[in-house]
Length: 139
Image (spheres, rainbow, N blue to C red):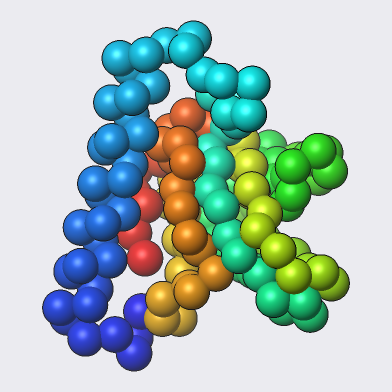
């Protein structure tokens, strides 16, 4: 987020916080009411829109058994454990919208590395639905 103005950062963080709070509220109020198309509640889920031949990345701090499913039905990658900041990336050969699912344990998660990510279009569940130990979800 180095290239964003202070106002842009504030707006982004405010929207992210509101989306996470709303998702947590819905999951708390309506447990078990998910439709057949809803993602499982044991994962952190977000939707991205990718152009053909582009990559999406995010970072986590001190991941433990962290798994990522980069598109619905593709299956989770092997669990990864590391220290410090670890980057998870996926190259998409086809354009489209993808639901990314994450589960495991980490202390921090950053969906943006440098500047905003125009690919991120929606946060579908709270981070804590699938990633334990989160103490920060800052950009």
